[in-house]
Image 1: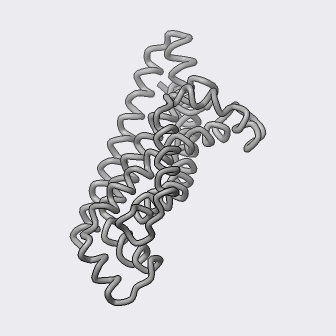
Image 2: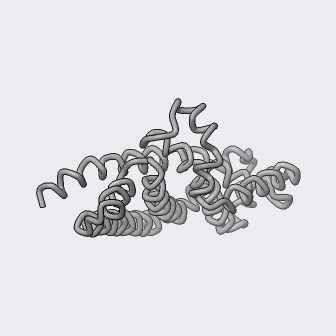
Length: 216
């Protein structure tokens, strides 16, 4: 048991590092992308059909690639960004590229759910597009956005486990090297339990936070 724990702790730390940084960057890139997808629509506050079409196409193409293929496809880019293609830091690059379009679509859906009447009221009061985005769209969609971040976070955990099978480190790497290659079923079982606990904890916290925001 002590041996399993000694293996799990560093792998869990690597997974948390990958997931935290990847989620942070995904939200940083995906939130504005999702907002642009909505606001650049022809019937919204910043209509731009060309921009909307190009962004939608790029996002759809990226989302259509299976994660394992994406990792291999962008190896040169990963090496250019972080100087290596192996390890937890290198795994962050494909994780962010895979998760950003996914989150952008979630943001798009959340923002579109905002009552257009609220937007129209802001326009009639002379609010600028930037003010509408910051003071109306994001606050009104916040509960839904929190749930979207939660779903994305869990998705990234799944991606990180797959990244571990190709040298990304973390719990996926532990399960692959010990549970699969060395047939140590106890390590595989322990890894699965840790992942289930991690996902359940994140989902419960995300649901609670979204409900709290919604009540406020």
